[in-house]
Image (cartoon, rainbow, N blue to C red; front, side):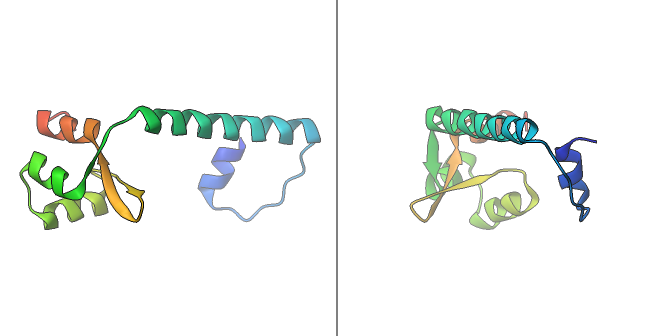
Length: 95
């Protein structure tokens, strides 16, 4: 069982790891986070108002879609933003 399986299981366990394994884990986590940040930097985002307009839906529908995980919002300066690519997927019927 790897560490991700342990985390997702919710089990309350103590583990002992050697320093090299811990270092490898930190590198893996940091590397995946850097990749995620770079991806988000290249992504275009739109405001809530623009998302509603592009999708031609009511604000309650957008709220419900967020709640159910159909679309994800990203906080920027205390305001929600939506990925343009997610909106395009929804509009094309692929999501």
